[in-house]
Length: 117
Length: 114
Image (cartoon, rainbow over all chains, first blue to last red; front, side, top):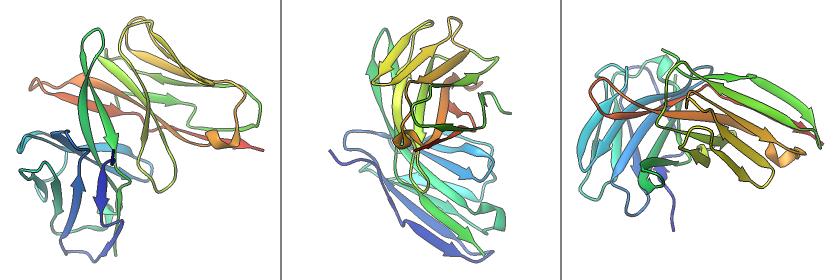
């Protein structure tokens, strides 16, 4: 079974430009999550999409946006890029698992390394 | 707000040694997950713990969830160079809006020297 895939692997942009990052979830997963992993800050939650709808949003400005397509793949768009947007952007998809109760497990893609010059 | 504290932040040991890393919070989590991440790659899920006091074993790795579901530990026995990586814990919490969110610690960077 194919895992979460992300493209491109690396992306270099200049300040003020726009970046588009793409993610394909594991087959059968309907939820997609986006995270930013910057040096020294750990993984910061950006966005959660499920069934085509934005379900939750992290503490990021509106220039970070995205969407989920009918096939559950997703795009993350970052407008008006700033130097501090340089980071590894990770996408995860999730499935529900039943133990003593239902819980959610997330599986990550390899990430897109965005560098803003 | 940093809800999950991981310690130590860095750990460098020799092959064959044992180690424990910790994940602590003042918040209660419905479940907690441990991931291992290698440089330039995405985190790989190791285990999910769900029940307070739960212990799970994955070969030489032992994971424990605290009785109050606020903390967790990862113990590695006879560490090997292949265990080198960033170990992340992530707790599932319910937001004010009622939706779920996975909150990550900053990780423990483990180096196992041959």
